[in-house]
Image (cartoon, rainbow, N blue to C red; front, side, top):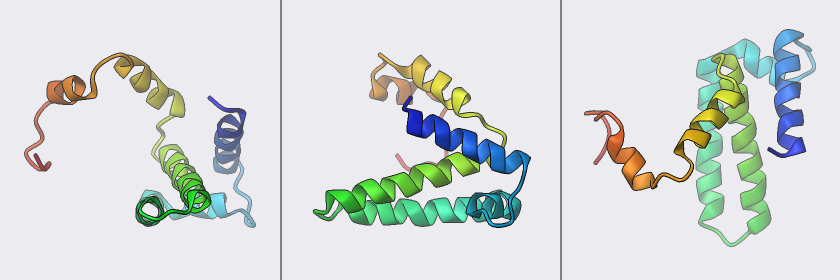
Length: 111
């Protein structure tokens, strides 16, 4: 993974361990998963909107915001990025269609 991503993960972990009242990350972590998930959803919508436009810089910026909020949510829920990496490693080399078909059926998901 990139140095920037690893530094961001370390900063988020640091804010979780030692909250800083002037830190946005600390404020999000203290607000809890529901608030962080809401922010993640907002950032996802903004990323989608940027993806539909022609401004690559806007898409890159919104994607950075999306990844940041996802990492904060993972920290808040006690899921390490290494756990995510392990799943990605397991899936590497497997067709996405094959992998998805092998998952247990979720009756609440769209076909």
